[in-house]
Length: 112
Image (cartoon, rainbow, N blue to C red; front, side, top):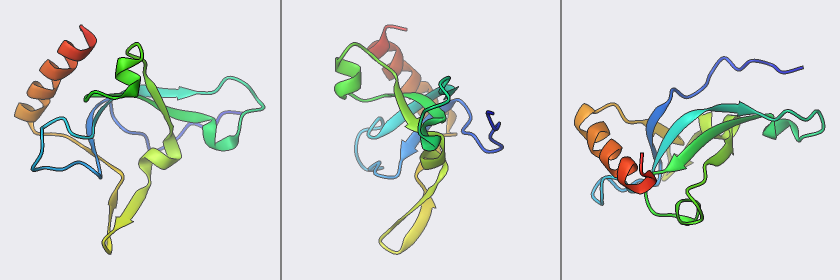
């Protein structure tokens, strides 16, 4: 039976923890478009709930036909530790100007 998660990312743009704020605005940026679940009973438990997203920078997924990526929800939502500091693996982007610029990049990339 599917357990409905209590913690999921909102749709929108996110920086991966590897994002370089001194680099280009869309470095390691992803757009979450939803959450999906595996419909087969025999899938691995960690693959039952997946974040559906796409890169907002050129990547294999983008150049291979503009596919969406899937990432296990549990991993998406977890914290990581780097250089002795712990923080979310993905951080939601909330600045309206940055979001507007990322929408323009996304629309150009994906012909939206």
